[in-house]
Length: 353
Image (cartoon, rainbow, N blue to C red):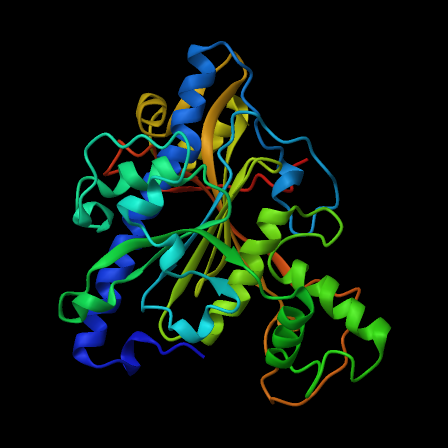
């Protein structure tokens, strides 16, 4: 289990606060990169934007979709501590894919706005997000972690690119099943059919159906499960061109972002309930609008049921495949990145239709 803030030393609490602050800023910028910029480009180019439907945000949806040509798929891993070299067998990072001038030179079409220098990768530099956005299109994951060489300064950096997640699905399912007390020793201790069910439930635990999930989303949830083994907090972001969503895995659980079309009749109810005002809503929350809809960014958090959590008594139990492990918790309309004083607005949208 990860240590809570109240179990940390004072210096560790400072580092935790710093990490959470940086993660909030990273998330704000990812919303711009993943949703606001592509949306503006679609409108300027008169290209239909690929909105997400209510059913797409339900847990364990079983349906294949075409990849969106305007989405930016990526995986980002952000760790509070440095990942020890002992984990390189399953999280593939080394000097060969470290952020350096000579390794970046091997990537075609990478164009940095400024000449490369050693400090460009540090979170506190203005160049950090330029570098991050430039490398998002490189396959596999980007790794942000605390730089070991600056332990006293709590400096975080984009240290590696092209990071492969190489942990087998069966081992990830075994790890989760032990955590939730459905097995005690090995994945196959209760037979092959039971093991298959546990592997299917691994995907449900992280918000997907095992038959309708792509490689990038699979790698993201496998990384989230593996990173439970390391010290400190870890957060995994997975942007999918197929689902047109951005999913976050963290100590808070599963959460998802998407651009939706909110019908104006229901939006008026949300506006009145939250006492915002129509014009303030347009300026602070609306990407664009049509005759019948507002285009907004939605944020959904999910929570695990008792079957997706360790049992209170710690005893072994049998799995029940028909019982859901993940359900919708909170739904919110998020303010635009420029509306710094605006609050998220709660709503009920996913199961309205």
